[in-house]
Amino acid sequence: MANILVVDDELGIRELLFEILDDEGHSVELAENAAQARAARLRAAPDLVLLDIWMPDMDGVTLLKEWAANGLLTMPVIMMSGHATIDTAVEATRIGAMAFLEKPITLQKLLQAVDKGLARGTLRTVANNPAGSNAAASQATAGEPGSNQAQGTVPRLVAVNGAAAAASGSPDGAGAHVGHVAAVAGAAGWHVLDLDAPLREARDAFEKAYFEFHLAKEQGSMTRVAEKSGLERTHLYRKLKQLGVDLSRLKRNAA
Image 1 (cartoon, rainbow, N blue to C red):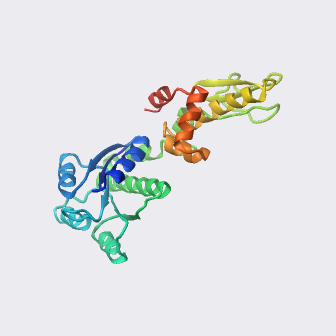
Image 2 (cartoon, rainbow, N blue to C red):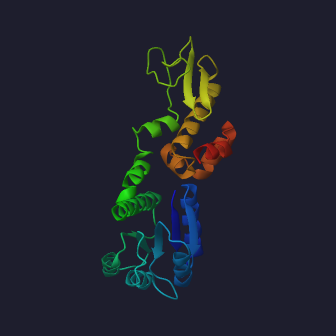
Image 3 (cartoon, one colour):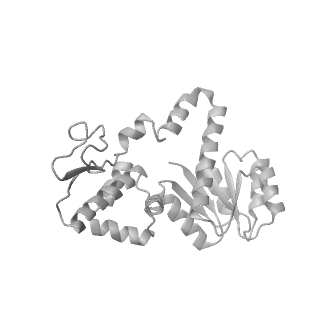
């Protein structure tokens, strides 16, 4: 995952962005003003910067100009503001910012902008270092759907019902169905669902396999699983605890 620098003078915004990006598996450093951001940039070049425009000591556009003038604008920068004008956004883009996010920032727009920024940073690295292009390309496609690596590391969910879908990697190599039993592949292996069990028990077993599957697929990201399942994060945490899902093990496996 990436090293991301978040620069914003509002504590609440910094904490929120840290929680979301940390949950996505990124290493996040926080700065509340331009001075701290400047020091963080020199200390360890981040892969991506989220930069607020309006700050008390120096605004984000001025800091962006400084980085560009000194040859330090080597990483994608996403500008953020709740009060910026179109002219300000255009100026930031002209200087070198890759995107502009208007506050309040929605989760979907944030993650999309971060993904695009990191992808652009990878392409820039490949362009500047052709010798490493094959390795970078391999890393960029490793987790894409359909790649062998992605298929090998993310357990697939297969509910087998009579002659329904089979899956490689199942207990007998072709799916599992014996009598009134269905086999579901989860992060902890195969879950056997007794279809003769009371509805609540069968539902709990399926839900546990469902959440383990998606947590593994999303590399332990509670944010993405909450979005996928349509549950609030707090509700999702309670549901996983109720079902006995071992989050610590899933995160270790995803690491």
